[in-house]
Length: 385
Ligand SMILES: C[S@@+](CC[C@H](N)C(=O)[O-])C[C@H]1O[C@@H](n2cnc3c(N)ncnc32)[C@H](O)[C@@H]1O
Image 1 (cartoon, rainbow, N blue to C red):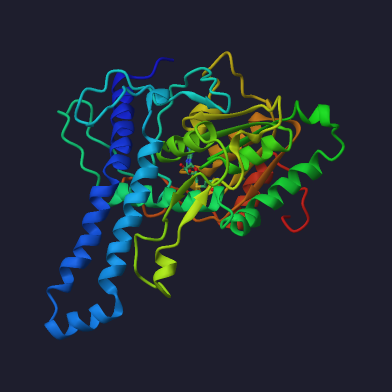
Image 2: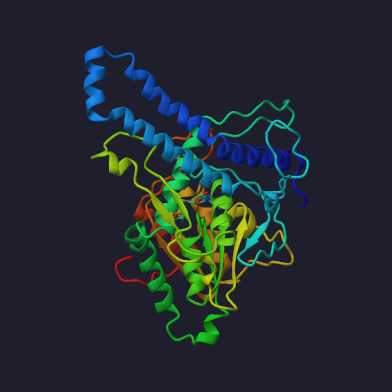
């Protein structure tokens, strides 16, 4: 079914706004740092002098430099958004949005695949997902607000978790048990058989778990609907050669609870592995769009979903559901016979107390397990019964 024009326009506008958020990062963030600078002059002279002795102003100057380095990195990510159907050198979201198609299927080999027309939002933060202006309203100049910048700052931190050496411990605390469970489930598969086993990672974020699974030799598809994540994962997976070639400062945005300057001004270089180092013949793709729409409806006759996946790995994902019943039903339906669903993460229901009047079902762990059984899952790992 063809998507509604107004949905496409809304989506295009949203994509343009996200790109503009990347491009406005320096101005917005430098101005926040400048607020600190100006506040010094609101203090009594004696207090200003004491702060001067601490080197507080020098810390602000160093923060400016770090912010500018972050801006360079973020600008690279949105330097070329044509891959997403964007027009070259788009400067302003208030322009027309005729040609943008942010729904492409992104693959590691720059194979664009078939476009998917699925709606999405960037609601990976908590309640109250904000949407752009309705298509019938005249386009107003978009100015990123704290809400938008917060997503961008989270994206930088997410880069640390997924793609840096510094993030390894945190990353492996989540991904290793999942990869181990996957390997254990298919322990008897030969190397050749493994290359035919299809693994889906919904809510793939910046793509590291999906990449690691592909590196283990499985066919792996990540799915993600946030443009912040999609632009960033595309950049790291398809536009980055070599290790530690991008340096940024993820902790420069807040001075609260910092033990010292070094902690605020810590540089992180990514990636820790060369993303192009997947073994020859690897089959790794990222599909943009809403999980429920892509995998829950047989909307693309060329890509049937029912019973097609040998494993589904959900990491910090299932609590993004408005209706967890539908998520579990889809996961169960698209698993192949003998397939496995491997889940890790909290039940921090993203839509709890939302202000956008979206439905939200917030099960406790017992209820979740009982629901999974009723839908047809059998628990196979000790401790999760
Ligand atoms: C909490 S993050 C976890 C990301 C990643 N799995 C990780 O562990 O770092 C949840 C992710 O799911 C994505 N997401 C949420 N709902 C989604 C949906 N319906 N379809 C596709 N992606 C979704 C969000 O954009 C976000 O990137």
